[in-house]
Length: 118
Image 1: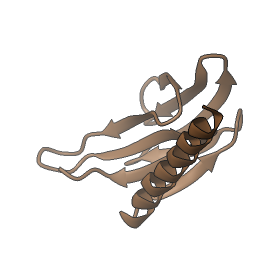
Image 2: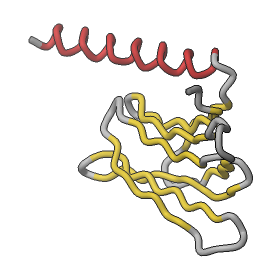
Image 3: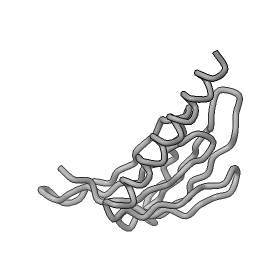
């Protein structure tokens, strides 16, 4: 039983590494977050910070964004291993939206900024 758990854990880590490498291959900018340390993010001119804390139910991710003119907006989510959340900003009609993805791979959290393909 323990060998199956170790094998499954290894397979999950390999899958996470492949998923992260795919993000890099698509030309996206990616950075690893550290627990409780804010990381600057920008989505098409909308600036903010993201951070996470380790909680009992998972990693609690908080991202706060503002465009400089209005009230800031806060996004909060709890990620289990393999989960992700995406924050996107639409562009003009017909334009391709820009997004930031925050993903958990095992015990690591990555922030990736990219233009979304339609």
